[in-house]
Image (tube, rainbow over all chains, first blue to last red; front, side, top):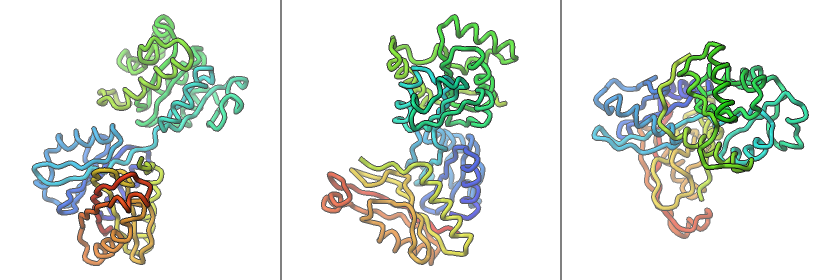
Length: 244
Length: 112
C-alpha cells in the first residue's frame, strides 16, 4: 500500500465517511472508492481494473453489507476492504418504547444516544450506561452530526420535540429516519414539515408510521418492528436521494 | 464464533501504521482476504508489522502470526506483495478456541 493511499484512507475515515480499498492482488495496485466514486487509483494501467460501474456496484454492496470480500473478475483477483464508520442511533424521546429499543439496538452494535430535554424522562435510572442528553433536539442533532451510518428515530409524537429533530435529520445523510405516530399524526407531521419548506421527496425519507407491519402492540414488540425496519433499510440498496 | 474486529480497532491499526511510517519505520500490512471452514479471525482483519517485528492487530488467534511477521519482513525488504495460505489444523484450532480447523489466506503488502 502506498503512503498516499493510506493517508487518503485515514482522511476519509476520520471524516466518518464509508470507504473501500480495492486491491488487485497480483500487482498490489489499489484504488479507493468512497461515495460511489473513485477517489484515488495507483498505477496507470486502467486495463487492470474491472469496468468502473461494475466495480463501484460491487463495492457499494460490500459497504452496505459491511463485509470485506474477495472479488474475482476476468481482470484478476481483487480484494475489497471495507472501512465503515460505526453504526449510530439517535433516539429522540426517552419514552417507554425507547427503554425496550435501546438494548436491542446495542445488541445490533449501534452506539445509541438518547435525546430528551424533559429531565424526568432522560435519567440514568431509566437508561443505564447510555449516552443521554437534555439538549433541545435540534441542538443535540446538530452536535451529533448524523452520517450515512446513522439511524434517527423520534418517539415523542410531540411536534415541539420531534419536528426540530426531523428538520435537522432531513438535511443530513442518515440512512434511516423514522417517526412514531399514527397515520393521522404522521400526515399532520408531513404537512408541518412541508410548511417548513421540505419537499415531498425529502419528507418521503421519513418512515412513518415507524416500523415494519408486524402487528406489534407492546413497547417491546414495537421496538422489534423498528429494529427490523432499521435492519432492512440498512441492507437495502441505497435509494437515490437529493444532496443537500 | 469468530471475534469481530470492530471498526474502531481497524482504525487504530491503520493510524498506528501511518504513525510508524511517519517515524521512518519500515511497515507492512497483512489482511485476511479469504477463509474456509472455521478461522479465528474474519475476512478483513488486519495486522500491522514494523521492521523490528512490533505488531498491532491480528490475523489469527496467534497460530500464524509468526509466519506472517516473517513474510511481512520479506515484503519490507523486497517491496513485493505476497498472498499466503495457511491451514489451521484441528489441533491448533482447539488451542485458539475453535471446534475445528480451516484455511485462511492472508495478503501481505509493504507500506511504501
